[in-house]
Amino acid sequence: MNKVLNPIEFKQDKLFLVDQRKLPLEEIYNEYDSLEGTFEAIKTMVVRGAPCIGFTALFGIALWLKKNTYEPEKLQEAATYLKSARPTAVNLAFEVDRVVEMLKSGELDTDNAYKNVLEFANLQLEEAEAKNRAMAQYAEVELDSLLGKEKYQIQTHCNTGILACGTLGTALGVVQHLGEKERIENVWVDETRPYLQGSRLTAFELMKLGIQHKVVVEGAASYLMKNGLVDAIFTGADRIVANGDTANKVGTSNLAILAKHYNIPFYIVAPSSSFDISTPSGDQIEIEMREEIEILNYKEHRIAPHESEALNPSFDITDGTLITGIISEKGIAKGDYKLTLEGII
Image (cartoon, rainbow, N blue to C red; front, side, top):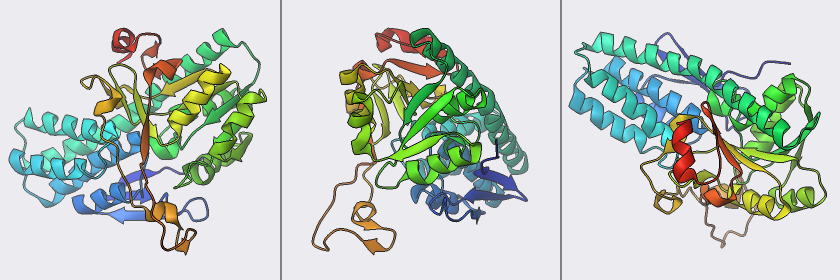
């Protein structure tokens, strides 16, 4: 298998991010040396995917420490600002809050604080590889137990691979793991409007990995399921709350409803950093609304009447009752998630 781009690199006191808005036609790294630049990279989706957003934020805090004297109050202000870049993905706040608490617990000068944050950020990336591999292994055991096939047809939504996670992916990590064992018959890649993360990014990764796939519009999901072309669906998550309700890229809930109708297993694959057990249900999740131009235009080209308006929720909420299982690095939860989720976080 070929190597996919590494979306995050930190070297010579600067952060380099693959501009995922340019993929797959251009492979360009943008360079950042400030907290403000990191904020814009997250806000404008140069970098995206809940885990990658979290890791990027850690390096953003390091860049702030490189330019500012470490004082807990000022660091908290910087952290609050950075967390506002994208409110729905819990990984952003999770990673920022963790590193702030880590620094508060020790008496550090600015130089040592900077070094500690960099070490912490790189460690999280290293550990993510092992954690995501464990999730993929749990998923393989689950599929074999439930379906017992030699090869599988998997449907995905949005992008949950290396570009979203900085390492082996979550839901797409399952696909990569199965692909490495030649157990993939085909991957159905939802194009994922309006940002086309599926056709631009997931298809790009699968092409690099040499895994058989076909891109489909979201509206084709019912056709695929009705005609027996989908064995299981795996998606990622930006936030999972106490009752199993899950925020993910808009269109995920549609897939789950159809899967329930056609009796196709539907799984969420996400690290424990994506869990928000303090929130009781999806009703309390803030849904990020993005600019309507993302729908009305494609790049610089207008595709709707100039008089038209659009509503552009970036996420939707999939009810926990529609989810066959939720997989983390610690196992798989099923049934009453209020009881079972605690065992995998």
